[in-house]
Image 1: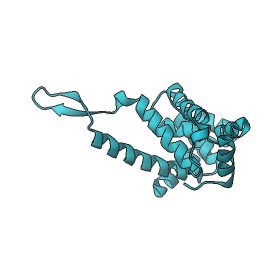
Image 2: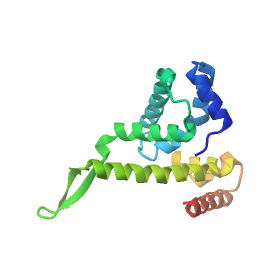
Image 3: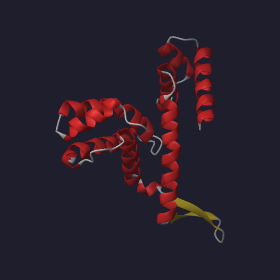
Image 4: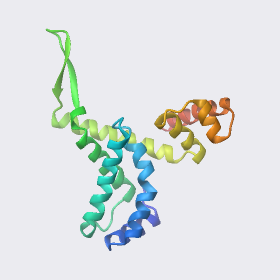
Length: 181
């Protein structure tokens, strides 16, 4: 993930306390971070809270922020960390208790959790990059299909295309994402 010139300028302005730069950074990344966060939780309000916490911390600790940072990468990493930290209960690993033939929860070891987090972060970063390379229409179609759980008919109506075109568009998006991953 590379910094854009705009991200670097916004970061520097935020460090100086510029609320407009802060709002602009939030507006630029809130939606993509929400999509990213929803990969770790099914509750949209939970994901939004995690993202808001990221931006609150940035503003709260703005004077101590690092001079050089990859803004996009930083936002994704911190968002993931916040969601995982808040969703710690779901970080359990189930194993089969052979004696009683039922599943019992077992706390993941630190190493297992760290490896799982790193693998998930890497995969999600790749996915976020791949999604960013799609056209606006493709991203919109995927958003409505998988985030809003809208049927193809409704997506077709929103995008002003035929139902078959909406199916084809989403199919091709998924095929392209699989290729890139």
